[in-house]
Length: 171
Image (cartoon, helix red, strand yellow):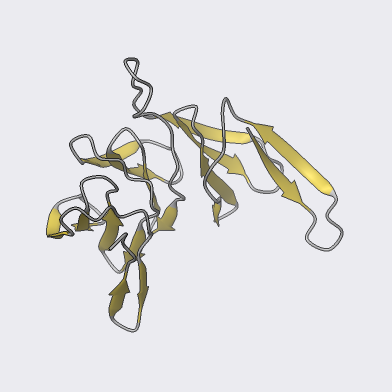
C-alpha cells in the first residue's frame, strides 16, 4: 500500500507515500512527478523529490462484486498527458500537470491491466478478457483501429520499436 523512494546508491529511504490499497503497477516518472495508481481506485501524481501529493484522480468502483476496481496498469507519460488503464474498464487520459480528465475510452466491462504505449500521436493498449487491442488518437481518444484476438486474453503491455508493434497473448 506504499510507494517508496530510495537512494539508488545506498538504498536509504528518502520518502514513503501511503495509498489506500495495494500498489500493483510500476511508477512512471516525468518532469519531476511520479505517477502511480493503486487498487484504492485513485491515480496519484507525487512530487518525485519529496513524495508529497500533487493531485489525485478518482476512477470507477464496483460495489456489487468488487471485481472491476483498482489500477493495475503502469502509466505512460507523453506530450503533457498521462495515460493508464483501469480495472473499471476504462483507459484514462489525464492532463499530467493538473490531473484533469481529458478523455477516457470505455471498454464495455473489459479490464485494461496492461500498460499503454505511445508513439507520436498514437496510443496503443490492450484489454484483458475481451481480447481486444486498440490504437487511438492520443489527443482525443478517437479509435484509429482495433484488432480482435478472439478468445486469447491480453495481459501483456505493448512495446514499439523500429516501426513495429509487439504484444504477447495467451495463445
